[in-house]
Length: 250
Ligand code: PGA
Image 1 (tube, helix red, strand yellow):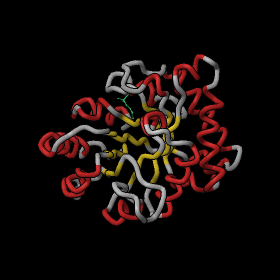
Image 2 (cartoon, rainbow, N blue to C red):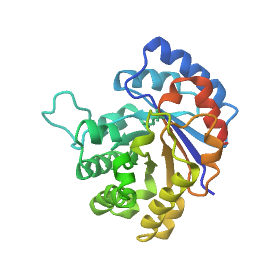
Image 3 (tube, rainbow, N blue to C red):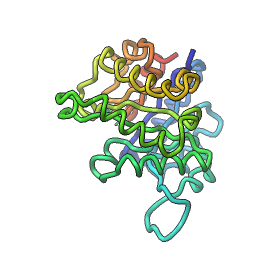
């Protein structure tokens, strides 16, 4: 039985003061939630705050993006070894906002995944189709291409120490959640595709759903066989919503 994982993706939101009250509520709520793994991914300037505030808590933390190379003349970028050095556990790679707004290709995302893992971080690899792609019947081929690019670069064994997040682009921040059946179908497809390479790795792989998850819809989503938790945007900024989602994973 896979443990559920709930990850808050704060995106470009927060301030020291806002984060402090959010983190103190999450920390105290998390004490009661020993059967679910919880993590928060914040903008770089707030990682020090997460490190300090969450030091004595079971809540893990990480970053939202990473550069694919180890070091060099890349003004403004942050390497995986820096994040690991600082104490991050997780890093999100290939979020649809990075793919769609910043033009990150599946190959680049795979390189970021590889860099994260070789530094000892756990990559949270995001994938998902746009509305147009879903309506065009391309959901599986889009997700397969995003997954296969990583398998081709690092091999399927790498998924033994990674998390996948299925996030249909049309459901992110729109209030439109995929139904639990729609999400389950894609999660099962992802797991089967990994199983085609290694059944054991597939069985242990944590596959999160993301896209307008809220405390109200989390129980139904998390009840599905292949949905192992959530990657939470908007609702991660509201302590009671986020903790409600975590409780659904308990
Ligand atoms: P949302 O975002 O929960 O606000 O839809 C999810 C995400 O982008 O990770």
